[in-house]
Image (cartoon, rainbow, N blue to C red):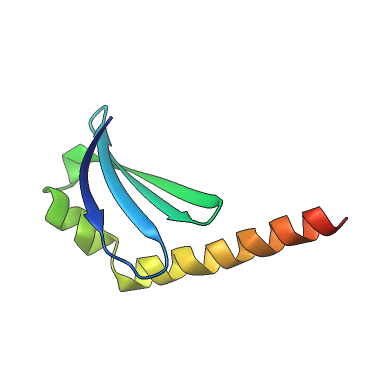
Length: 78
């Protein structure tokens, strides 16, 4: 797996990898991560990946991180 790029974001790290004919987009925030695999055959390079992982997509990922953090907090309080 090799890193092909990063997408800047103020609250999370977004790294784009390439492996087995897929772009793997990894979002990291604190101890949480989310990974999306995109078929390389349907994309036209890193610019196309960045178009897909746009501000709306990133906002949904941030919402999901919020849910994940809440779930972890609740589990740790039990």
